Image (cartoon, rainbow, N blue to C red; front, side, top):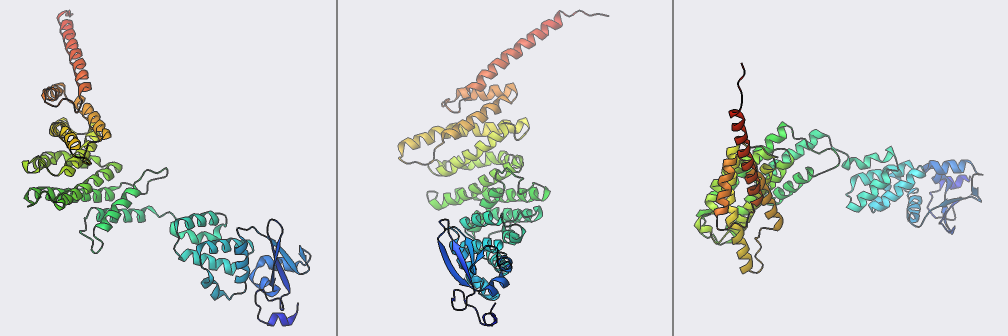
Amino acid sequence: MDTALQTKPCRFGDKNTSDIVICLKNREGIPKRFYSHSSVLINKSKYFANRLSHPGSNNSNNCIDIYCSEVNYDHHVNLLRLLYLPTDSILDSFDSVKSAVGILQLAVVFQCEEIACCCIQYLEAVPWEDKEEELILKAVSKLGPIAMPILARIQPVDLAATKDVFVSAVRIATSIAGPCPPFGNELKTSAQEQVEFMLGEDEDAPLVTADEEVKSVLRLGLSQIYSSFEKELSSLLLEPDLVSERAEEKILHSLSDLEWMCNILGKMDLMKDFVSNWAESSSNVLGVVENNKLDSFMWGLKIKLIEITAKVLEAVGYGNVILPTPIRLTLLKTWLPYIRKMKPLLDSKGSEETGFPYKMSEDLCQSIEGAMVTLVLALPSNDQADILADWMGAEQVRYPDLSEAFEVWCFRTKSAKRRLVEGLDGAGNATVSL
């Protein structure tokens, strides 16, 4: 090799000083020549150093053939250019995640350690878009341990760190720590969304385990939200302008937090806490909502109360939450008359006003009806009789339809009477043996 060439600064593509040609060939075999320098190739690439140390290995007329596709052709060219840059300038030369990933893949193949390290450092530091993240994951999975630092930001987090994030998010989502200026409701809404996401159905192990610390902060959050809701509700009738949207927005916001908490607790086996609070406060809630001042207003509040109550009735009716008979009976006797009254009122408003948004959907109606039937049938027979008599004596017998519960009650009552008679007859005919 000419000593003069080794001492002169080498420039990529300089034909006058080049002593080796890199020939990039596509699938069709069409070559593209790049004038290079063996000193640079040997110094920066173990692959080229090995090729050039064996002159007879596929090197003809000082030319090295490299086959590439249209997809990675530009990456090959960029890699060759980077071989000529000082190490401290390589990092600043990258202009996109896609380019850096492509160059990294080739740098590993051609054993260009300096360039590979710079690619990894760049990719580890810059932000990724969703599509770029998919590209990185696909590429890195084939590169082995060398590229693992790139994935540090998406590695699984240990359970303790995950729990800390979850607990902090719950505290913000339930306003345990108070308002969060200057972010306010935006941060609270984001925290609620992410808490729900962390508890979402997943094939793998859950992100958060409901240990005592997690349960404690969730119960504290429930207490905070209930307190806020009761405060808003108690001051509702004191509002000077009940027709205003602001008055309803305040209470609906508080009720939405309560509904969110209901969904969260159901995923953490803490639904009993929510149901117990709801059952305890139901009479006070309806005492406000059924006030004459609200007869023609707050339809959004009324339908939202029914929707939350449906979740409570389902939890109790289908045995997911176990409550004593008196509480189940009170829950049913409290909400059955209200829902029975509201259904025709909402239907009537929907017929009178085009676009009236507050209606009981078919799914909601079926959910409530099914839960009430199971609730009735789980009560003592005398309590069932009281509820069914009241239901059939009402003006609106159409909803909810408790006819299934009525039929089962009739069958059970007749069967019980038969068992009683048979038991008495058996006792009367029994012989006494000494």
